[in-house]
Image (cartoon, rainbow, N blue to C red; front, top):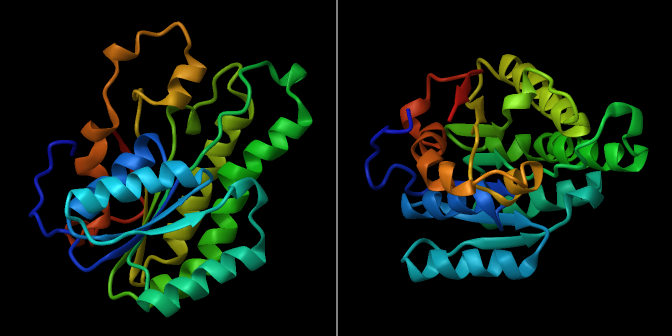
Amino acid sequence: MTDYKLPNNALSGKVILVTGAGDGIGKQAAINYAKYGATVILLGRTTEKLEQVYDEIESAGGPQPAIIPLNLLHLSEEQAHQIAETIEQEFGRLDGLLHNASTLGEMTPIANYPVETWLNVMQVNVNSAFVLTQALLPVLRNADKASIVFTSSGVGNKGRAYWGAYSVSKFATEGFAQVLADELENTNVRVNVINPGATRTKMRAKAYPAEDSNQLKTPDTLMPLYTYLMSDESLEVKGERFNG
């Protein structure tokens, strides 16, 4: 699937929200979606990083993006509904939602895991995705064909020592995606999950500080899959988990 070939206008006219759009896979996905014609809504916690992605998209000739600076650690139900209302007012619909924002927490045994860190990881990786998805569902239903994609992890379906809250949060992410996919099976909204595998990102470097990152694939190699699942080429693909 990483070699999937798409037409240059595969996402033309689509409006896609990307969380964690300031760095890593989220940044690359946003740039790639714009390259294929989508208007991208960049959501992330660091305005400066989002502005850099914005400028890169514009300089490449992509549709003008929108920016939502937001720390998902503090996302409230009210804020999520405000985001949904703004998107509906500005665009009338949402064609795609990529849940990519995540925080690693700490690499430590469960016996020593700080409770506050555990709760923060769950808030960013799981709770915010639920709150945002719930608020955005009506706007997604306004689209003719909508797609929700979750970024998971290799520790999201097989637990591993010391991965703590991050691993558990990714199990929850995949469970949430499965429930959602089943509930939306006969609607215009499809749901799928991507496990990127070992990828050259800052989070990976934090988890494996001694690893030679030059031996890892870069986020751009995953983009055919991320783009395919947002395009109309994947209309019949629902409730699947893909390995990058």
